[in-house]
Length: 225
Figure 1 (tube, rainbow, N blue to C red):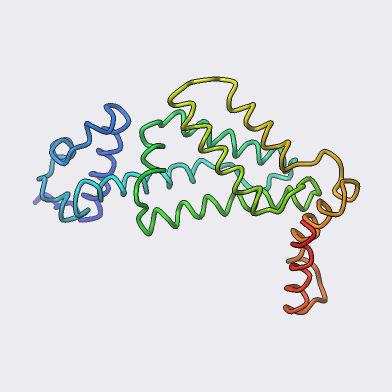
Figure 2 (cartoon, helix red, strand yellow):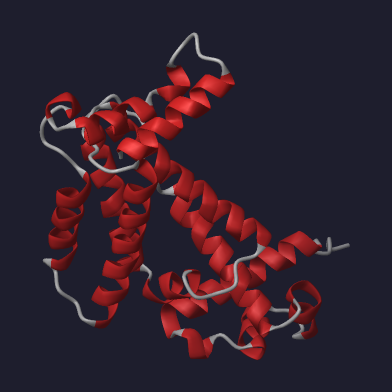
């Protein structure tokens, strides 16, 4: 007797088929009928598992974030932290340009709880990369501001290049981001603000401070930056 596929298996199959149709034929090809037919299931299965077509697309976006996260290079390879930050930038640009329809969907759909968690995991990797740059004394602005600028610039570059391809745009944007957030000289030689950014990044490792003292020091350092 042939074993019946499980609910999770059917769900994964539908997401995979929808993602393939999206990549090969575009958003208009992703209909409940076409997905069900290609997956070899009845259309009502989509409504039972995802609610509607939008729910299916949200799950495809979640799958996209998971695929993107799996491709991210290691955070600390022992190399230059700025080079590792650039590697993350290159991955983001490359993934977006290689998966145009999926990338658009990832940044326009309503994230599922799992998709939101996966996207946040990706954001955490970026924050940790930026923190390594700060600890090396190479960051001139607060970490949160650097993260926000990198995310906004990276996604904006991809969406712009998808509409108007310009092979030089990604490099020019990276140079502009670097000019705004990085310093070429050690933080101690770049003024008190850069030194404060570096010290703030090291706060978790500083010994002999009570939680209250750490909070107060963080507040003072934030004022300096």
